[in-house]
Length: 276
Length: 276
Image 1: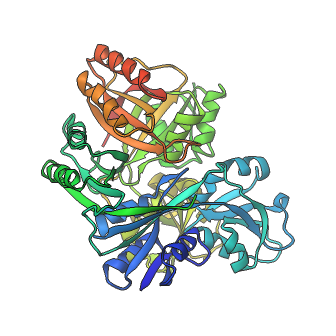
Image 2 (image 1 turned 30 degrees about the horizontal axis):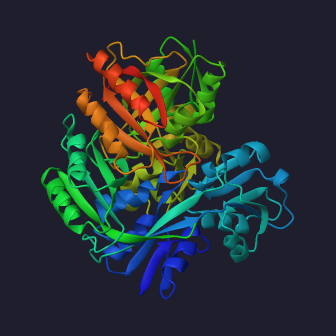
Image 3 (image 1 turned 180 degrees about the vertical axis):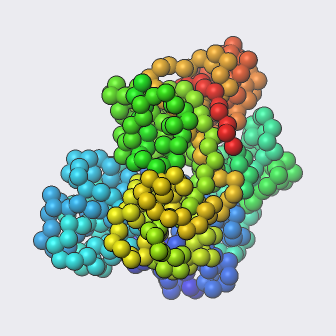
């Protein structure tokens, strides 16, 4: 199988891809959107993308693409611990550094380290942690630049590790999903099911919908919301349901939810692999 | 009064500050966090920061700071239309551009324009749209760079407008809040009240809390969630309530919500100014 992931090589998503698709051919893509669209176009079989970080929250680019741009189903979820490192060329010290390149989610994860050790350095966002590392690897000798990224990226790009575990929160982890066109709407003993819907813009309409889950004894483990595309001030709610050993209740609850929502999409039922 | 805002000059937040604090001395700050902390330390009286964009959703840096780092209250909310422009030095054409600088929220707002007109250009995130504009203004003559930002920034930094209204969604607007230490927990005829809380991690606990609003006939106009800091897999829910002409019901509902939540914070009651 051909499995796309958010590249370039050396990202945390590559780590996730190696764990989630050990037997497959993994292919780096330039953005979440590119990887997911490639599955939609049958260019590849599956894609592995981050969906939530424990500090930064939902990865909006991933969730918006799944809701609005493609019709794919989640096959599996992986919870991976994240350890951020400060990487630079040989001979650099933390005191030298003036500019730090990394993904826009990784920079704020290291806010305290910045304040204490790099008070005068600027953060520059790149499209992935590995792209930040690559930028530093290509920099001229002696240029005061560093990157925040995975330990494995240091080796890949020939950089030194100036500091390890620099993220504010020592229990930092990211959830990655493996998605494909294979429909998994029905929770055949899969732990979790993720659905999304938008309601009519009426007072109390969200409450009435959540009441349906209560009636059928289906537990929600998470609720997040995103703006509805092209409909200012309206929202899509993304809800994780606990769906093990309650298939009939889930089916009936979702039948009612579909009838009572203006937009509904099932993003799939899947198992969770937690290697924290 | 001294009022801080997300600078530098020429940002959309400056536009909001001019509208929300027309009589006051407005002062640019380097980040949301710096502006809000400055109010907390009594360095300034108020701060004006963005809280939500109609395409990109909640501004996480603002909401997390209000929840976890400061004790400030929302005084007023402004809904401002956003028109993004592509700005570059005199003599540049769209076809020349290789790198586009802008805020990490502004770049994805122009995804379709990028795909159609700038398929080979890279987006580089800056801490504000105006910082992106300043970077382009400082670039060497003939360097193939442009910025996405407000029309007013073009004048301020002496750049030309290569394209106007380049955001994907023509009904793009941002909500800005004015905050201070003045407590506004009680909705003295203010339209909206924003609260946040986290629940014990038990099935159905969120549902039970929302039930309290239903019992007291208090309507929720929005619910979003953010990860609870230092507590992986737990969430804070941020809820907007419609609180005009129902002060007693709101008081009673919030009394019960406080009793039944492990963390609770009232972010204030305020009126909405909508200039769409």
